[in-house]
Structure formats: C-alpha cells, structure tokens
Image (cartoon, rainbow, N blue to C red):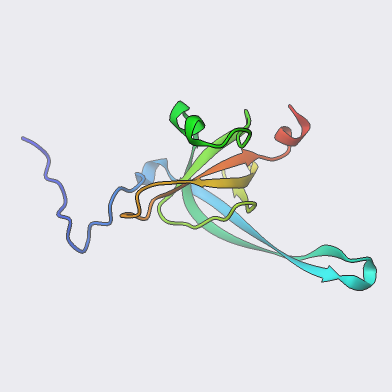
Length: 130
C-alpha cells in the first residue's frame, strides 16, 4: 500500500529538510560605527548572534554550473534552511565544529515554499589557501 501524502491544505508548507539532517548554526550580525574623527574608519561595536537550523552539504555539479565563474572555491559548500534568511557577506558559524562561513549567494528555488539554500565559503583555511 502506498503511504498517504499530506493534503495541500493550510498545514502543508511544501518541501522541508528532514529534522534529523538539521543542526544549529549561528548568524552573526556585525554592527559597525563610522569614526570620522579617527581618520574615517569603521570599527566593530557589537556582534548580535541569532540561532537558526540548517543542513550543510557539498556543492554538486548542477550547483557549480549555475554559479557565475569565480564565485566558488574548494572550500565552498551550501547551507539549506527551512526559511531562515541570510544576506551576502553575512557570517555564519557552525555549532558542530565552530567553523565560520561567509555567505556568498542564494541559490534559487521556486517561490512556492520557504526552503532556502545559500553558497557559503569557509573562512580561515580558505583565506590561507590550506
């Protein structure tokens, strides 16, 4: 017998990432202050951390074909979320191993559901070429 599929009524919200694949990530918002009196520099004044759930996966060939040339490295991966919004340049930290990633671009999905995916690049080893 075929399993019953949920109806597409008010409770169905489209595809979702299975909860057993999800783990906590921290979105880091950096607040900066522009200091004209000190030579026109920006200085970090505060870091605001938000927790969201996501799944970190490697890029596949289809992802690489759709990205503009030069926008991915060997340290690029993708984060799937069930709706958490991230912005290019945003810092994201993995709760599992403490790695920090920079959000590059959002990979498109159809707009009928809330699942989002982003290309992220690992910081540290990526910057040093390791």
